[in-house]
Image (cartoon, rainbow, N blue to C red; front, side, top):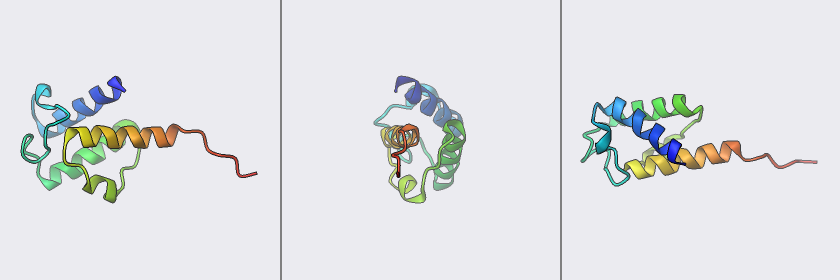
Length: 88
């Protein structure tokens, strides 16, 4: 999980052009990091590329803080790595 947090933080720092120490779980994307709606779309696309996942429009609309982003990415990664139930 710590590696996931670091990867999310690195992607966000690069995308938002901020120092990595500003990427705390409580940091609000708009107020604290100065992200515009376009910045948020671009960071979602970057995170999708980084983790090989798809973040739905509904999920991305709920992202307000870095903590929200980490939780969202972690949930999707977990969902995709969970073994599929047999349908036999």
